[in-house]
Length: 109
Image 1 (cartoon, helix red, strand yellow):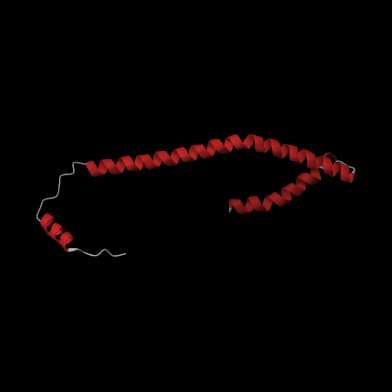
Image 2 (image 1 turned 60 degrees about the horizontal axis):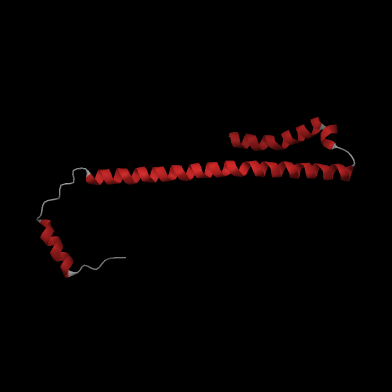
């Protein structure tokens, strides 16, 4: 969006064209430094809040997952009549390793 040049603006620009630049004495640099430090501080606070929130939410989520896994294990044992996890730990560990290995290999590349 272009701004329309008014005659008053042109007159002010011509008036200040002959005036010397005002002395800055590092004021602009100081302002920019303070703004940058506030931005860094705000980003750090947000990152810490996310980490703390995730830490607070992790404990109940872990307990919920443990409860769910116990319930599912009980459901599988009652449906099949056997406890597959205790009877075949080597086969189950091999199957889990077979499924996880390609994912880990892809992440390492």
